[in-house]
Image (cartoon, rainbow over all chains, first blue to last red; front, side, top):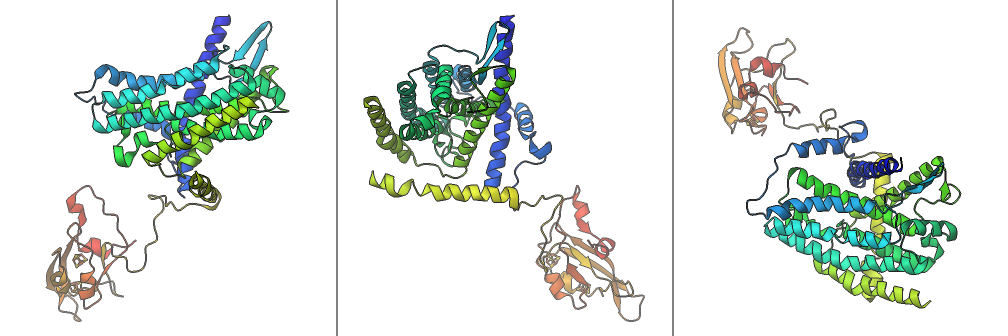
Length: 336
Length: 147
Ligand code: SF4
Ligand code: SF4
């Protein structure tokens, strides 16, 4: 019985994250269109909602070209990793309060254990392998450049992410996402309960998350005007789609993580309490999804507002400004 | 550090406000897109598209087959075969009048050259066809080439 329930939960989480992706692709196009004074996709289905589906069908029917001199094993492995790693990340995110079924407590989180934040970080850093492998295995100079850029960028910004995780650890004294939410429910969301620090760390984390997801203005690894397509230049058909979907899944997961760490996850004062029944769980899911979509909107807003950084500015931003700031803030927080 | 704090990054804020306002304006105030196959851009007077031969008040073609347009045409795409006029007020009428729209450069010289104001360029501009022959317009087609 329990194992069936758990499997259903895993399936639900997978469907949830895979269901968000086409929505995000649609949303991205719509928002970019609105910001530029256009209408965006509106032909396929109501409001163009079926556009991502049409894209997938198109991509499936495209010819899958493998470069002759590509390193076959790595070449096939990279898109797989690009998509699987963010999906695994989602396993650690609690997306709703517990449901108590008779004597069985059903956690709306695929995998809850004490050090989930640590694990989250570990899996998060595999993202760099996907792009580095993809760039290197394609045997193409543009891909290689894209891969190198991605690797250095991801490594530099991961430090800031780790700093923010460290802050969360200092503040709440826990490494479990679920406990984090429970504590936030009890003592107020991170972002308001520890005002100047939390906001600064939230901004730092947000910037680093943008860079981790290779989103504009940090999308140098796939800068079209300079690098053709960056690390996925040589990928076509469904392999490209996997990189693409992986990117959106990573964005979703990052937003989930941010909402859990700083915005109280599924908790909303007055609406959702931490332990409860089925309705409460649904409300919690709605709350966390609302938070995630607000964050995702900000992601897209940033993407369609800012131009791309120059590479040296990108590096300087991380190593000269953001990283020292993170370290100083952590030191101050630790001393207080 | 001073530069970082003062100008470069704070200047982003007006940009964000701008794009947000733009977005709200697009959602509530409309957009610039023209839904092409259904909607068309309204063309100005004097747009040079497909040709049309005008008719007079009696329904006869105004053209008197003087070949001025054929001579003036820089792309050599007008072919006129003249025949004797059945009416007393003119000497010739066109027996056949062909314009190869695939050769035409839409310069409007024919319109300028015509002494009888018989040929004009309409705003029609959709030049898609399945066969090349479809784009060689003959007399009847030109006479009835209206919107
Ligand atoms: S528009 Fe110019 S090119 Fe076309 S038929 Fe008239 S004179 Fe010739
Ligand atoms: S110039 Fe005018 S009247 Fe003369 S042949 Fe051409 S259309 Fe006819």
